[in-house]
Amino acid sequence: AGVSGPAGGGRGGEHGPQVPLSQPPEDELDRLTKKLVHDMNHPPSGEYFGQCGGCGEDVVGDGAGVVALDRVFHVGCFVCSTCRAQLRGQHFYAVERRAYCEGCYVSRSVAQTGVQWHDLCSLQPQPTLVQAILIPQPPEQLGLQATLEKCATCSQPILDRILRAMGKAYHPGCFTCVVCHRGLDGIPFTVDATSQIHCIEDFHRKFAPRCSVCG
Image (cartoon, rainbow, N blue to C red; front, side):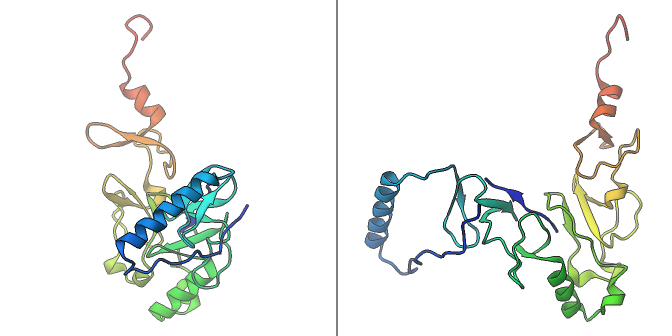
């Protein structure tokens, strides 16, 4: 689950004409040529950020879109897959490359697992920022501790969020610097030759070459 990031006012929702999959190559080449001529004669008025993952149209201009799920969306196109509420700047859950608001995600989990709300209270993942290393556990695994991944630090099942690093899974609270024990969830870190995790500051204090005069 996560928070969408700005790509650059909100255009979106309009769908352009769809090109038939069976369109002959000559017609496709003619369409692309006309589009190229049109684009050259009508340059965008702002910076181009890519094609919208929702409607397929161009996302142009600062504030026009958001970045989420490794794609660019118009502000108006990045919505909950169930209730269609806009998610710009909101916490959301990412499931199978679809975005869900918190309420719809909980309802979806209950519908799929048959677990009632009060049973979910202690297990339901909290919304988390969408980052490459931070993801919610699949809903179908709620309550099935035998199938849950175990933390590489404490060896306990991970019930809510998984933080992945170096091919291993961690509780976010267990992913800490081996020297100062500061939590490194969302913070830059590095590892030594034995794969021990360090914050940047402690790594440099521990391994940086020392001056032969002042030490």
